Image (tube, rainbow, N blue to C red; front, side, top):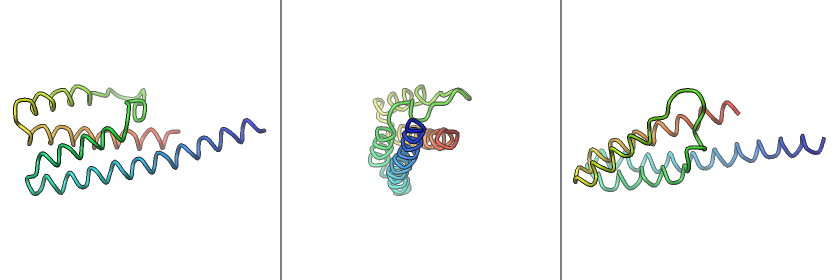
Length: 111
């Protein structure tokens, strides 16, 4: 019975912690999208990168369903940034962040 209680507590704690992280990540994305609308692509890129950092490793969102190609997309964003195309880099990076947010929400709802 005690193990069951600990498992329930752990599951509830994770759900609350995940929701808090997702709120922070969504906030970074929102600020980035506002910056993008104002053509502040460096700020947009920085906010989306920070959102990805907050979200953490692929274990946070990865499920066995589907193929996750977001890592490859981030590589393309890095290349675009190195080439000086910050607008393209921010577009790709923020799209990846949106995708990973959705993957995380899906994983949390499955648990």
